[in-house]
Amino acid sequence: MNLSPPRLRGLLALLAATALAGCGNPGSTPAAAAPSPVLETPVTVAHALGITTITHRPQRVAALDMNEVDFLDRLGVPVAGMAKDYVPHFLARYKDDAAVRDLGAIVQPNLERVHALHPDLVLMTSIQGNHYQELSELAPTLHYDVDFRDSRGHHLDIVKDHLLTLGRIFDRQAQAAEIAAELDAKMEQVRAVTAGRPERALIVLHNNGAFSSFGIGSRYGFVFDALGVKPASGALASSLHGQPISSEFIQQANPDILYVVDRTAVMEHGPLMTAERMANPLLRQTRAWKNGRVVFVDADAWYITAASPTSLALLADDIIRGYRD
Image 1 (cartoon, rainbow, N blue to C red):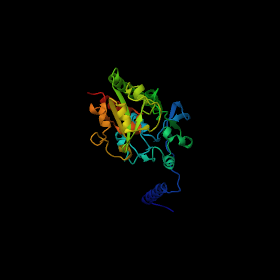
Image 2 (image 1 turned 120 degrees about the vertical axis):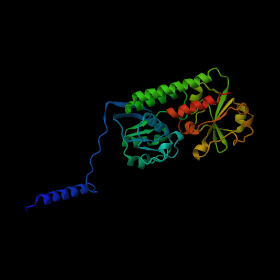
Image 3 (image 1 turned 45 degrees about the horizontal axis):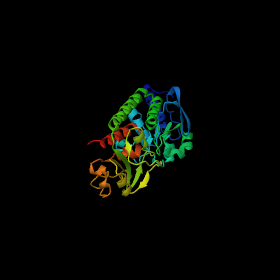
Image 4 (image 1 turned 45 degrees about the vertical axis):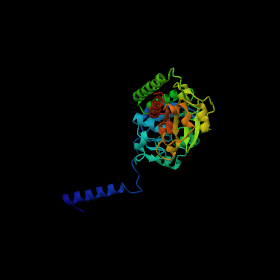
Protein backbone atom coordinates (compact mmCIF):
# COMPACT_ATOMS: atom_id res chain seq x y z
CA MET A 1 0.00 0.00 0.00
CA ASN A 2 1.40 3.34 -1.05
CA LEU A 3 0.92 6.21 1.39
CA SER A 4 1.45 9.83 0.63
CA PRO A 5 3.86 11.65 2.98
CA PRO A 6 1.02 13.35 4.91
CA ARG A 7 -0.80 10.06 5.45
CA LEU A 8 2.47 8.36 6.43
CA ARG A 9 3.15 11.00 9.06
CA GLY A 10 -0.38 10.60 10.41
CA LEU A 11 -0.01 6.83 10.69
CA LEU A 12 3.28 7.16 12.53
CA ALA A 13 1.72 9.67 14.95
CA LEU A 14 -1.17 7.28 15.62
CA LEU A 15 1.19 4.39 16.32
CA ALA A 16 3.23 6.56 18.70
CA ALA A 17 0.12 7.64 20.58
CA THR A 18 -1.02 4.04 20.90
CA ALA A 19 2.38 3.04 22.30
CA LEU A 20 2.30 5.83 24.87
CA ALA A 21 -1.19 4.86 25.97
CA GLY A 22 0.03 1.32 26.48
CA CYS A 23 2.55 2.56 29.03
CA GLY A 24 -0.31 3.17 31.42
CA ASN A 25 -1.75 -0.30 30.98
CA PRO A 26 -1.92 -2.20 34.27
CA GLY A 27 -0.30 -5.15 32.60
CA SER A 28 2.72 -3.19 31.43
CA THR A 29 6.03 -3.25 33.31
CA PRO A 30 6.88 0.10 34.99
CA ALA A 31 10.31 1.59 34.54
CA ALA A 32 12.70 0.57 37.31
CA ALA A 33 13.26 3.18 40.01
CA ALA A 34 16.68 4.76 40.10
CA PRO A 35 18.87 2.79 42.53
CA SER A 36 20.03 4.43 45.74
CA PRO A 37 23.60 5.76 45.62
CA VAL A 38 26.17 3.28 46.86
CA LEU A 39 28.15 4.48 49.87
CA GLU A 40 31.88 4.67 49.27
CA THR A 41 32.34 3.14 52.70
CA PRO A 42 29.46 1.10 54.19
CA VAL A 43 28.28 2.28 57.59
CA THR A 44 28.13 -0.54 60.15
CA VAL A 45 26.42 0.21 63.45
CA ALA A 46 26.43 -2.10 66.46
CA HIS A 47 23.42 -1.47 68.67
CA ALA A 48 21.45 -3.13 71.46
CA LEU A 49 19.47 -5.39 69.10
CA GLY A 50 22.19 -6.40 66.66
CA ILE A 51 24.44 -5.04 63.93
CA THR A 52 23.12 -3.02 61.00
CA THR A 53 25.16 -2.42 57.86
CA ILE A 54 24.05 0.27 55.44
CA THR A 55 25.56 0.04 51.96
CA HIS A 56 23.39 2.55 50.06
CA ARG A 57 22.36 6.12 50.80
CA PRO A 58 18.75 5.77 52.04
CA GLN A 59 16.09 7.50 49.95
CA ARG A 60 12.90 6.41 51.76
CA VAL A 61 13.27 6.60 55.54
CA ALA A 62 10.65 5.34 58.00
CA ALA A 63 10.98 7.02 61.42
CA LEU A 64 8.99 5.29 64.16
CA ASP A 65 10.00 7.63 67.00
CA MET A 66 9.71 11.41 67.23
CA ASN A 67 13.32 11.74 68.34
CA GLU A 68 14.30 10.21 65.00
CA VAL A 69 12.08 12.62 63.08
CA ASP A 70 13.82 15.51 64.83
CA PHE A 71 17.26 14.17 63.89
CA LEU A 72 16.21 13.89 60.24
CA ASP A 73 14.58 17.31 60.31
CA ARG A 74 17.68 18.99 61.72
CA LEU A 75 19.88 17.24 59.15
CA GLY A 76 17.58 18.21 56.28
CA VAL A 77 16.79 14.59 55.39
CA PRO A 78 13.31 13.92 53.92
CA VAL A 79 10.99 11.73 55.99
CA ALA A 80 9.04 9.22 53.89
CA GLY A 81 6.89 7.91 56.74
CA MET A 82 6.46 8.37 60.49
CA ALA A 83 4.16 7.60 63.39
CA LYS A 84 1.72 10.49 63.63
CA ASP A 85 -0.25 9.90 66.81
CA TYR A 86 1.78 12.26 69.03
CA VAL A 87 3.76 14.80 67.04
CA PRO A 88 5.55 17.49 69.09
CA HIS A 89 4.84 21.12 68.28
CA PHE A 90 8.33 21.68 66.89
CA LEU A 91 7.66 19.01 64.22
CA ALA A 92 4.02 19.98 63.59
CA ARG A 93 4.58 20.63 59.89
CA TYR A 94 4.90 16.89 59.31
CA LYS A 95 1.54 16.05 60.89
CA ASP A 96 -0.66 17.05 57.93
CA ASP A 97 1.95 16.65 55.21
CA ALA A 98 0.37 14.17 52.79
CA ALA A 99 3.80 13.41 51.34
CA VAL A 100 4.83 11.91 54.70
CA ARG A 101 2.99 8.63 55.17
CA ASP A 102 1.26 7.97 58.50
CA LEU A 103 2.74 4.78 59.97
CA GLY A 104 0.40 4.58 62.95
CA ALA A 105 1.32 4.91 66.60
CA ILE A 106 4.68 5.33 68.32
CA VAL A 107 4.01 2.47 70.73
CA GLN A 108 2.34 0.27 68.10
CA PRO A 109 3.33 1.17 64.54
CA ASN A 110 1.21 -0.14 61.68
CA LEU A 111 3.51 -2.71 60.12
CA GLU A 112 1.33 -3.08 57.02
CA ARG A 113 1.82 0.61 56.29
CA VAL A 114 5.54 0.30 56.91
CA HIS A 115 5.69 -2.57 54.40
CA ALA A 116 3.66 -0.58 51.87
CA LEU A 117 6.09 2.33 52.20
CA HIS A 118 8.97 0.17 50.91
CA PRO A 119 11.54 1.96 53.08
CA ASP A 120 15.25 1.51 52.56
CA LEU A 121 15.99 2.46 56.18
CA VAL A 122 13.91 2.11 59.36
CA LEU A 123 14.78 4.13 62.46
CA MET A 124 13.40 2.87 65.78
CA THR A 125 13.91 2.83 69.55
CA SER A 126 13.28 0.32 72.32
CA ILE A 127 9.60 1.32 72.30
CA GLN A 128 9.22 -0.54 69.00
CA GLY A 129 11.86 -3.13 69.91
CA ASN A 130 9.57 -6.17 69.67
CA HIS A 131 9.17 -5.47 65.94
CA TYR A 132 12.89 -5.34 65.20
CA GLN A 133 13.20 -8.76 63.57
CA GLU A 134 10.32 -8.23 61.16
CA LEU A 135 11.43 -4.71 60.32
CA SER A 136 15.04 -5.72 59.74
CA GLU A 137 13.87 -8.32 57.21
CA LEU A 138 12.12 -5.54 55.34
CA ALA A 139 14.97 -3.00 55.30
CA PRO A 140 18.12 -2.09 57.22
CA THR A 141 16.80 -1.19 60.67
CA LEU A 142 18.75 0.97 63.09
CA HIS A 143 17.97 0.81 66.81
CA TYR A 144 18.60 4.03 68.73
CA ASP A 145 20.09 2.87 72.05
CA VAL A 146 18.64 5.64 74.22
CA ASP A 147 17.43 4.36 77.60
CA PHE A 148 13.96 5.68 78.41
CA ARG A 149 13.99 4.06 81.87
CA ASP A 150 17.32 5.22 83.28
CA SER A 151 19.32 7.87 81.46
CA ARG A 152 22.17 8.09 83.95
CA GLY A 153 25.67 7.79 82.58
CA HIS A 154 26.00 8.71 78.93
CA HIS A 155 22.66 10.07 77.72
CA LEU A 156 24.10 13.12 76.01
CA ASP A 157 26.92 11.11 74.46
CA ILE A 158 24.38 8.60 73.09
CA VAL A 159 22.38 11.41 71.52
CA LYS A 160 25.43 12.95 69.89
CA ASP A 161 26.78 9.59 68.72
CA HIS A 162 23.48 8.79 67.02
CA LEU A 163 23.43 12.22 65.42
CA LEU A 164 26.93 11.77 64.02
CA THR A 165 26.08 8.26 62.80
CA LEU A 166 23.10 9.60 60.86
CA GLY A 167 25.38 12.32 59.53
CA ARG A 168 27.65 9.64 58.05
CA ILE A 169 24.76 7.67 56.60
CA PHE A 170 23.23 10.71 54.86
CA ASP A 171 26.47 12.51 53.98
CA ARG A 172 25.69 15.30 56.43
CA GLN A 173 28.83 14.97 58.56
CA ALA A 174 29.62 18.68 58.79
CA GLN A 175 26.03 19.57 59.61
CA ALA A 176 25.82 16.85 62.27
CA ALA A 177 29.08 18.04 63.84
CA GLU A 178 27.76 21.61 63.97
CA ILE A 179 24.51 20.51 65.65
CA ALA A 180 26.50 18.42 68.16
CA ALA A 181 28.65 21.44 68.99
CA GLU A 182 25.51 23.55 69.51
CA LEU A 183 24.14 20.87 71.83
CA ASP A 184 27.38 20.82 73.83
CA ALA A 185 27.23 24.59 74.20
CA LYS A 186 23.61 24.47 75.36
CA MET A 187 24.34 21.81 77.97
CA GLU A 188 27.33 23.80 79.19
CA GLN A 189 25.04 26.80 79.58
CA VAL A 190 22.85 24.76 81.91
CA ARG A 191 25.84 23.55 83.94
CA ALA A 192 27.03 27.13 84.32
CA VAL A 193 23.65 28.00 85.85
CA THR A 194 23.37 24.99 88.17
CA ALA A 195 27.00 24.93 89.32
CA GLY A 196 27.30 25.74 93.00
CA ARG A 197 23.59 26.40 93.44
CA PRO A 198 22.06 24.95 96.63
CA GLU A 199 18.50 24.55 95.31
CA ARG A 200 17.10 21.03 95.15
CA ALA A 201 14.63 20.10 92.45
CA LEU A 202 11.87 17.56 91.95
CA ILE A 203 10.63 16.40 88.54
CA VAL A 204 7.05 15.17 88.58
CA LEU A 205 4.68 13.88 85.93
CA HIS A 206 1.09 15.11 86.15
CA ASN A 207 -1.55 12.69 84.86
CA ASN A 208 -5.21 13.63 85.42
CA GLY A 209 -4.60 14.90 88.95
CA ALA A 210 -2.18 12.11 89.97
CA PHE A 211 1.61 12.47 90.19
CA SER A 212 4.70 10.37 89.51
CA SER A 213 8.24 11.29 90.50
CA PHE A 214 11.34 11.00 88.31
CA GLY A 215 14.49 10.80 90.39
CA ILE A 216 18.16 10.17 89.73
CA GLY A 217 17.46 6.66 88.38
CA SER A 218 14.79 7.60 85.85
CA ARG A 219 14.34 8.67 82.25
CA TYR A 220 15.39 12.15 83.44
CA GLY A 221 18.37 10.91 85.42
CA PHE A 222 20.70 12.81 83.10
CA VAL A 223 19.20 16.08 84.38
CA PHE A 224 20.77 15.30 87.75
CA ASP A 225 24.02 13.53 86.82
CA ALA A 226 24.95 15.38 83.61
CA LEU A 227 23.42 18.81 84.07
CA GLY A 228 24.17 19.39 87.74
CA VAL A 229 20.62 19.71 89.10
CA LYS A 230 20.51 18.64 92.76
CA PRO A 231 17.69 16.17 93.51
CA ALA A 232 15.12 16.80 96.23
CA SER A 233 14.53 13.05 96.47
CA GLY A 234 17.05 10.22 96.60
CA ALA A 235 14.76 7.64 94.94
CA LEU A 236 16.79 5.30 92.72
CA ALA A 237 14.17 3.03 91.13
CA SER A 238 14.14 3.28 87.34
CA SER A 239 10.83 3.46 85.54
CA LEU A 240 9.43 4.55 82.20
CA HIS A 241 6.51 6.45 83.75
CA GLY A 242 8.04 7.34 87.11
CA GLN A 243 7.17 6.25 90.62
CA PRO A 244 3.61 7.05 91.75
CA ILE A 245 3.66 9.59 94.57
CA SER A 246 1.16 11.57 96.61
CA SER A 247 0.82 15.28 97.13
CA GLU A 248 2.09 14.61 100.66
CA PHE A 249 5.31 13.22 99.19
CA ILE A 250 5.88 16.43 97.27
CA GLN A 251 5.10 18.50 100.35
CA GLN A 252 7.55 16.51 102.49
CA ALA A 253 10.28 16.60 99.83
CA ASN A 254 9.70 20.37 99.84
CA PRO A 255 11.70 21.11 96.69
CA ASP A 256 13.15 24.51 95.97
CA ILE A 257 12.30 23.97 92.30
CA LEU A 258 9.44 21.88 90.95
CA TYR A 259 9.41 20.82 87.30
CA VAL A 260 5.97 19.59 86.18
CA VAL A 261 5.62 17.45 83.04
CA ASP A 262 1.95 17.50 82.04
CA ARG A 263 1.27 14.08 80.51
CA THR A 264 -2.45 14.80 80.38
CA ALA A 265 -1.89 17.68 77.97
CA VAL A 266 0.15 15.41 75.70
CA MET A 267 -2.22 12.45 75.71
CA GLU A 268 -5.35 14.56 75.28
CA HIS A 269 -3.75 17.06 72.87
CA GLY A 270 -4.88 19.81 75.22
CA PRO A 271 -3.44 22.94 76.87
CA LEU A 272 -0.68 22.65 79.45
CA MET A 273 -1.42 22.75 83.16
CA THR A 274 -0.85 26.15 84.78
CA ALA A 275 -0.34 27.28 88.36
CA GLU A 276 -3.83 28.76 88.36
CA ARG A 277 -5.41 25.43 87.36
CA MET A 278 -3.37 23.31 89.79
CA ALA A 279 -5.36 24.04 92.92
CA ASN A 280 -3.45 21.68 95.20
CA PRO A 281 -3.07 23.04 98.76
CA LEU A 282 -0.17 20.73 99.65
CA LEU A 283 1.89 21.74 96.61
CA ARG A 284 1.25 25.36 97.45
CA GLN A 285 3.05 24.83 100.77
CA THR A 286 6.37 23.95 99.13
CA ARG A 287 9.26 26.38 98.87
CA ALA A 288 9.09 26.05 95.09
CA TRP A 289 5.51 27.29 94.99
CA LYS A 290 6.02 30.06 97.52
CA ASN A 291 9.08 31.36 95.65
CA GLY A 292 7.55 31.14 92.18
CA ARG A 293 9.78 28.31 91.04
CA VAL A 294 7.20 25.86 89.73
CA VAL A 295 8.03 25.30 86.06
CA PHE A 296 5.40 23.76 83.78
CA VAL A 297 7.82 22.43 81.22
CA ASP A 298 7.47 21.88 77.48
CA ALA A 299 5.68 18.51 77.75
CA ASP A 300 6.28 17.62 74.08
CA ALA A 301 10.02 18.05 74.52
CA TRP A 302 10.21 16.24 77.87
CA TYR A 303 7.67 13.45 77.44
CA ILE A 304 7.44 12.64 73.70
CA THR A 305 11.14 13.13 72.95
CA ALA A 306 13.92 14.32 75.34
CA ALA A 307 16.60 12.54 73.29
CA SER A 308 17.03 14.74 70.22
CA PRO A 309 18.75 18.08 69.53
CA THR A 310 15.65 20.29 69.51
CA SER A 311 13.98 18.65 72.51
CA LEU A 312 17.14 18.81 74.61
CA ALA A 313 17.55 22.51 73.84
CA LEU A 314 13.96 23.15 74.96
CA LEU A 315 14.49 21.00 78.05
CA ALA A 316 17.63 22.98 78.89
CA ASP A 317 15.73 26.26 78.69
CA ASP A 318 13.09 24.87 81.06
CA ILE A 319 15.75 23.84 83.59
CA ILE A 320 17.32 27.28 83.50
CA ARG A 321 13.90 28.88 84.12
CA GLY A 322 13.78 27.11 87.49
CA TYR A 323 16.87 28.99 88.70
CA ARG A 324 15.76 32.48 87.73
CA ASP A 325 14.93 34.79 90.62
